Image (cartoon, rainbow, N blue to C red; front, top):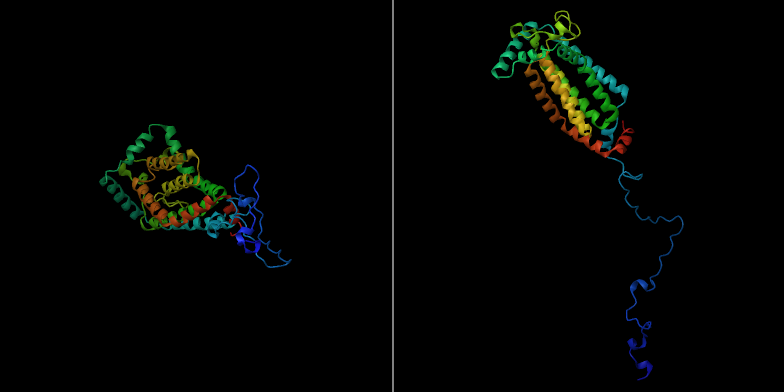
Amino acid sequence: MNLLQQPVWRRVPSPRREPGTDAEPSPASSPDTRPAAPDAPAGSDTPEAPAAPATPGGQDAAPAPRRARFAASRPRALRELLLIAVLFGIYKAGRLAANDRVTEAFRNARDVWDIERWLHLPSELNVQDGLLKSHALIETANSYYAYVHFPATAAFLLFMYLRRPAYYRWVRWVVVALTAAGLALHLTVPLAPPRMLTFTGLIDTAAKYGPSVYGAPQSDTVANQYAAMPSLHIGWAIIVAVGLIVACRTRWRWLWLAHPVLTVLVVVSTANHYWLDGIVVTSLLAIVLLALAPLYRTARSAHVAGPRAEAEGARVR
């Protein structure tokens, strides 16, 4: 058989192997015989390969969602101060509007006292008797009532504004909503505090031992002393504790619960509030927190997003 008559497969020479090797040449070592892609002409619109996704927190990280950025942003200070001042002025004016319903306030006070006895709640007199055993305790409790309520709440809001802006809007609206609900009750249910009820045996510790922030009820144009229900002393103290526990991560944050506990003991032992005042305000606060739960979830998401969301939020104020 001549060469032209041999099959084609007989004519293709096998690749030479090195002596002592039996392995076939690997594909990786074979030369790439595929035609090279032609270079794109200058100025062409050929799309480039997509860039690799950036790592979280990197310079090229995707911007935080607008909702999270807005929640993390810090409201402008002047606008915030004006808002709080206006709301506080409305609150004070509303409280004073019910200052002349004295007869109704004492009638409601007697009803509240009777309801507490029907519910078998501890007598406020027993708590006050424990306080009266120490003159230092009396003055401390009176000072706590007079000087801690507003400054502690203001300091709390300032801390949240400066250090936890993602949570600030949430706590601000919680305070506003609870205060509005309390004002509605002050207007509809005027209530004399237990220190004014002579039949209970309780005394006005602030008036007797000092310091006191109240004048004579008939001539007091600064505060409405017939607005015991509900106790915003207790309500605001709970907000401070809950807000700091949620916004902070230190293991000591649970100690903030001491503030509402001390506030309850102080307002009861000084005969400024009934047990029911605290129970009612706690119930109102639970409703407020439930209603504002979506705002809390937004605040938590913005806080988790970290400083990047806060920095971007400064541009959407």
